[in-house]
Image 1 (spheres, rainbow, N blue to C red):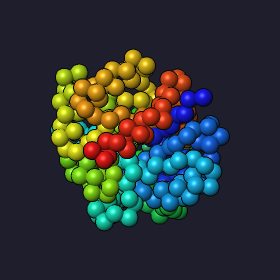
Image 2: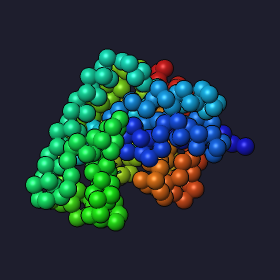
Image 3: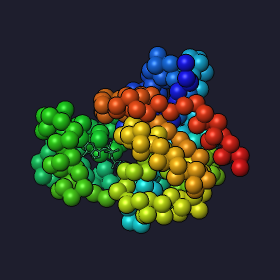
Image 4: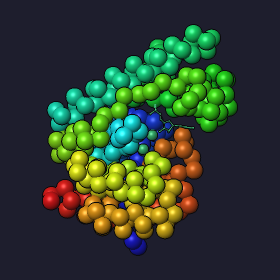
Length: 283
Ligand code: AMP
Ligand code: ZN
Ligand code: FE
Ligand code: FE
């Protein structure tokens, strides 16, 4: 049987709903050979995942997903094989957490001022060890009965252009790639088709990312058809980038995205990808 991997997984350390240990257990039950834990702007789940991987016989790649800025827009950069203790990483992640904290406080203060029954203390109590984001605020509002579905909260209140949306600081693309490299890792451009670039701008973006120090792009992704995945692999070859692949699993928060197989069963990222990423890191 072909060995498969899933190199894009979120846990309760950020906005996934499985703990790191539960994510590794699920990977094992699915027969995955390796997974990467890639929580948003935090490495807090990596130690537990690595321990669970060793105990259960699943290879766990320590990773993360940074929110970077490219031409006034957002771009996500995955980091693989990072050393969570690297000083460069600690400083960078502190900045992310502080920026998120400031933004969460702005959103919650605006909601409370308009009469919503919500406070930072209550959010903290609900998720004590989590890097909080809009999904948590949304879920909190649902628990209080303000809405029945996450989409509804974003459409009415928290989504971009809605009354309680507030922008969040993002790290410049070159700095995000540099931080990952300084932490011993390999940087990979996450879900390249999610940024809305037409083909020529996509290529320019990927070249910029490569010049900035990214060594790979995520050609295998839940939402991409086999044809899109094949096209992204060709782009990677043309730009001399390695290829990563993963589902962007978030557990119950994105129930349509299945670990290992993605949305339509089309993901199927082979173990060879990991060998390619390791080779790219050495070169
Ligand atoms: P944040 O990092 O706090 O800005 O929150 C971003 C996260 O919110 C994304 O990763 C999504 O998981 C979630 N999100 C963004 N827009 C929506 C939406 N319209 N419906 C549901 N979830 C969303
Ligand atoms: Zn997420
Ligand atoms: Fe992402
Ligand atoms: Fe993600």
